[in-house]
Length: 613
Image: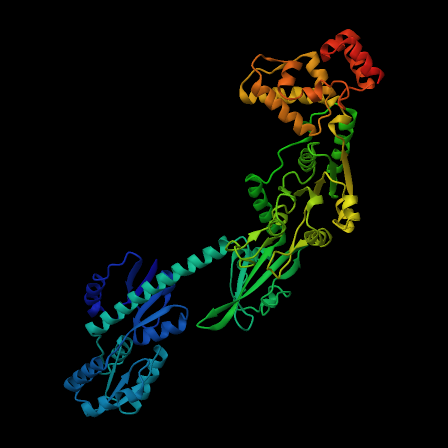
């Protein structure tokens, strides 16, 4: 809300003033009126207006006393002066008069003197002292009549000196009020822009300030004060930037790393351009920890979209000493940030271990990004891992794309089938591991990344190195900690637990009864060598649950499912149980030879022959 204070020049024009004001219909402007004699400004201080409308000497005096206020003068026109001179000639027929007006130049009245035939002395007056001086000097020079404003006339009346009061025309009043209202509207708009601008600045989490081309501060937000631990009342506008922060080079548009109060900050300087010319510099200062916090939030949001680990060590089914030993080692690996290489046949649970290591680590709240290095062609794998900028190659997404290493920042990236990675990309991966930074395809900038790498392979990388298909230096970077996952055939005691787990899981999933295994079926399944390891067990249990209608699973149904040749071997088949397996089964299950032979669907003689062989 803008406040206008209109100082009525004299009582006779009061009605004219109010009539003009009634025509002003603005809810965002307040107009008040008052009378001021001479240059008394006590009423100005009390009302604290934004715009002052006054005439003559009062206007000139107030402009000096309140340089920061908007002043609108009620002008004395040539017509007003001519009218006063005509009245003076009619009433007093003087030969010489004094014209006492603030701000009027002597050259402006030469034509007036010629027209009236009266000699005119000009006196520029701006306060009561100058009025007294003008009267004294005028009388000494032979002035017969003094012409001026209310202050001049009142002083002349005290001394019984002839005087003529210059009246203000209706047009001059209307012009001044219109100008004051227009100024108020503009001031309201500028204030709105200023409030908006300051709100934008103060709502920014960063410290923002601007300087002119001499390095003087022209604007700053509340965070700029807080950052330097300065009170908001401390005047900084107009001060040199070096008095605020010496380490900022405002002429350099690059990012600068600064240190203050034991913390790190990034300062970014951007030139401000108006009409094609640089008019100053905008400086943004951001705390390093806030950047890290923002990155962390982004990573967590990305995790919520799927970049998160799904398994933990409790999800790994295994009762064997070998599997318990692997879990124990992996738990210890999870407590450190070193890279881990998981080695094992297909289906041994490498991915489960990778997920579990991440979940048990101090990076558990950060992204977990998995990528199969064998599933993507070389060109696509590179862009997926490291990202690219817009226009880097034909078909690149507008705006570019962030790579998986950047998505995994602060978290873990799981590189499955690492042994299948093309040799050309291995060199770039090695650089990432060494330098902890990536360069997007087509970009000239590097981006720091903090990523733990867990990789997995089911092939012999040593043979790959010998065949020049895998870099030895990369292998040693990935193989800081390694874990060999044994195949299922080497830990057969895990088979019953895994079968029971998956049968229960799929029974719930398909809303069917869990099949009960006969002794013979369980023995046959334990005797099977499971080349697909846990993955094959899972597939078998799902199929068995879907196909089973009786609620029971025996050797006959195994045969129907295509497992006869593998689970119920005959004569020379390589899959017949060994003597040690037969003895172990008999001991663990406390079965007689007759019971075991019956469960396997063979005669006691065949069982004896197998054990002897």
